[in-house]
Image 1: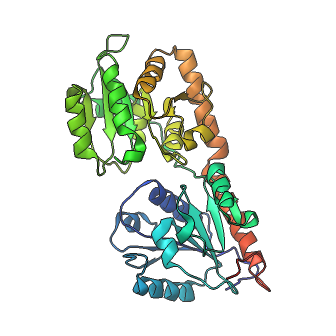
Image 2: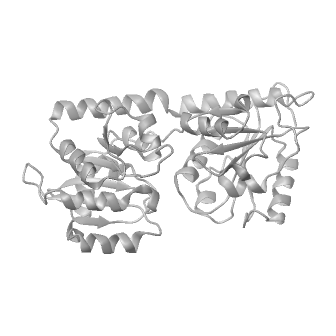
Image 3: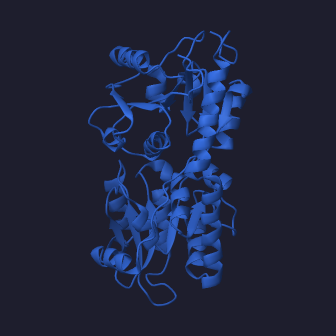
Length: 373
């Protein structure tokens, strides 16, 4: 499946139907490859949110991917490989990676993309691996994957348009937040994201900011903890100042509306939300989880708070809310510069296409650079 003189052909495979950080990056990367003229195809679950977001320019296949032992999906993906003839098959997360099994002695190369510190049992059969942080790269090599086949490429996020003041005022009014200072929590309502710590931290803050404006918490997202967290806000006496608006496919307006974006995660390998917040010129307070520590410099492009410590988080939020305009602007601009310089679409796309070309070269001839079985 080598195509001399042509750009590498990449097939991207993901299971599931709903959108999270990995799924949204899958969509961004696949669509960006197509926009830049790269030969690309995708395998998704038919009818899901991921499938609906794939650009029509992308060659698109489907498989149910019901579980690790889904023999039918493995057959479907093998048929797709025979039809599209990719040089690289890139799988995302555990289900797709476990379903895809490719021989080591001929193309295509199986590249497993990891966005977390996962159990590697279901990933070792791949031929090469890419982590989206240096921490994940080090984790993979420390657990026995060959260093010459482990790569690091970050994520990129969309570059949003800046909304007008009138548009933001209209959104503020729609949400019932006229005249309020706003803290923003955005993401899946999952235990890893530290939502309990955020609610307890918010409960420690005064009901009004130092300028006398009411202080409210806007929660954008959904997930298994929603009912539990809503009940917790009532128990903490803050329910009237916490607004649950569910999942939003276009988060940019909410980042731009917020006075402070809060990433309270207790486990966060990267933090796409940090990149998104920077891209939207938001001031960030994040806990010292793995991803924020790798991305951020405390006091330079955001503020870092203690991990899993509601009182410590509340202290840093108080600091963020009383920053003078000049320091706040410097933090915001430094964050925007970081995402523009190091996590832009052009930079990450260049890294991926270079990796595909390198893997394609390695897979020619005797199969050098591939894992032996």
